[in-house]
Image (cartoon, rainbow, N blue to C red):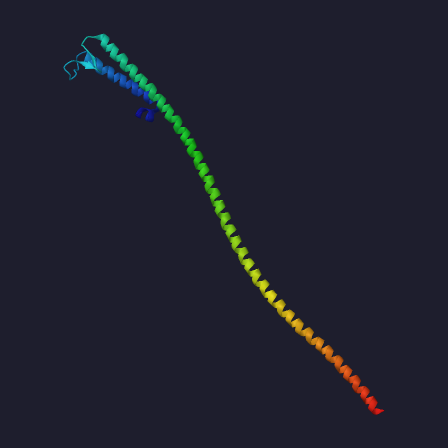
Length: 182
């Protein structure tokens, strides 16, 4: 997987070929008797290996190359699978960042609207309080004017009544003077 992450498919192929070459080299060195195993009987992967036995050598080489090739194919599949998932997750991450950005903008707009709404509500409450205060003052002044009107009208009516009485009295005085003058 190290080769897959560093070099993708080329790395997997290179690593597999290098591993097969190294194994073949070690096996040939042991086959030729240039390298000895530490065990009393020479064996590789549990298969008894005798010097000069080419069928065992070919079997072990084919088995190892098949195994390493299958492993390389599986590693390539996994690397491709992980690469596709990485692209998918990268796309999802970008999409999530965009959605998060939109949500943050929406949140900021809603916050601004709420602040504006709160300010408007407070202003309307202040305006309502001021209107109630002004209305109360107007009612008080109207009551005062009505009292003044009643007093004034009442006084005017009394004055008219008094003028009538004065006129009546003047007429009576004139009549009595005329009667006295006669």
